[in-house]
Image 1 (cartoon, helix red, strand yellow):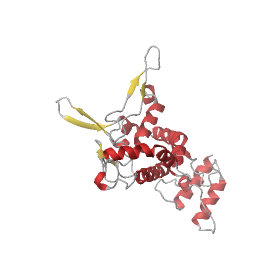
Image 2: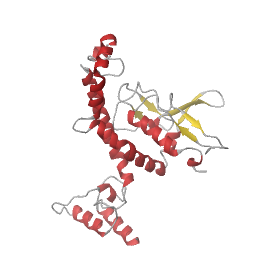
Image 3: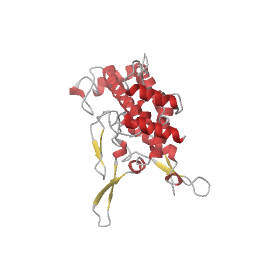
Image 4: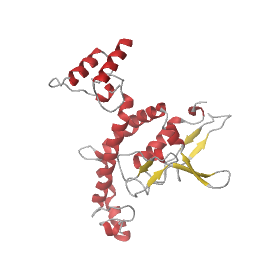
Length: 264
């Protein structure tokens, strides 16, 4: 059977993205909840919710996770996958501890799962992340201003910011509350920029280098002119022309592009 016969895929992808974006070191290990619907009166599938426990996330605590195939994710580097590499810890038949790849890590090997992840990310997460971090007045700052009096009262009692000497978790603390907020805002901005670049190739039409929504002879002409360095020639989406899938464009990609267009 297909994995979608057992899992409510949309809820799993949503739960995964919440963990991946935040780089929550507890994700899939603890405080990661799921429930099963009835086989008789429901769909009988595993559903994932709710989101909980994010005190060690958003670059708040440096850690790494390594799964059974040796892949590693780092919670303090915004330019790497993290939750994908979370391991499952268990025991073998002899009672010895073992480490395996999590469901998410296994599913991420499936191209259809990654494509769905990209679609959900750009539809439900990326616009809000941009609103949080990239507007003229980032929503992050608006939220921070609304709770600043409470944060300052809390800090007077617990000293949760004020420089390195007052670091509760992680390796950085702002001199003021808004300085600490900026540390988080900056990290989320870099994180979302990297994830957007990582998953954007799954949203375009192969060969559509001019990004007009379809693959036509105009795309072949555009790539050919770009390769010949014709002045003012730009490719709106160069990755769509990477037919060799080697992260570069050359005449071999052009040849494969022409071949695929002739097949249409």
